[in-house]
Image (cartoon, rainbow, N blue to C red; front, side):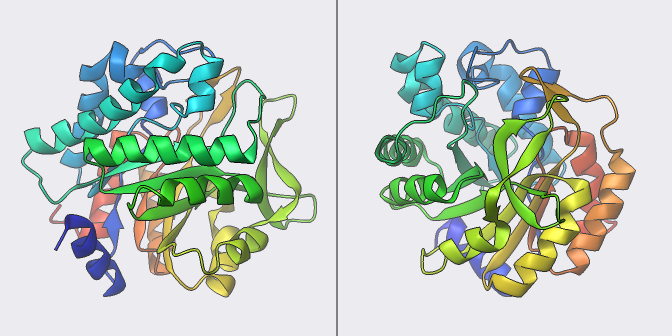
Length: 313
């Protein structure tokens, strides 16, 4: 039985499992220079030791799933960054560094997830066919590098979500889907838009609700849906929708902070103690995988660990 199948068996039996915190923002916080139009995706080649250390820090604190630092290494983003020739290298090394951290800590049951997104930092949106083909190629590279599953991240557009999902599934790896949400003017939880207001805050999408996204995933062979890269304050409202309409496994990895001028603003992020307190509430609602996204650091995951595994950890 593969490590993925063993974990899935545990989750379906009711286990609750911790994943990592933000990797891209932690790369940024530790001083790795950005790639223009590809955010913090460059660390796998420019500063591999830092990326490996971040994965190791999360594993030390009990993360059983770590996500490769490949959110920003899709083909269209690397084209925008002017380095399309490094597409295979970035995605291969992104997965390898997480596997190296797992091996160094002698934690063979930790899963490595390959992170894939349809996000654009330049505003250029590839066609659905290009997204599908790019995701297929990216997921195949990750599979060959040893990823255990694929995590689709920051899905904020239903048609693009389905295109990326279709492509990623051609790898033969299991695919989990993560959607990012915010309330609209009426308080309805919607997929975030790629548009930001004058303060750089992502806005709710144009009528595509979280419920719509859940319904679009029906019959798509997705075992787990995560609410991710969603502000801590909005998680409970998202869970209300998920509990009413989603019949699979549920994950949460919230963010804290603001994204301004392609930089994450850490000032004012939630404290580790408050993050653990909020997470306790979500765990009581039977969320089965839990961790953090942008702005959530190793000390947050350290504070979360006793909530998931008990004080002995």
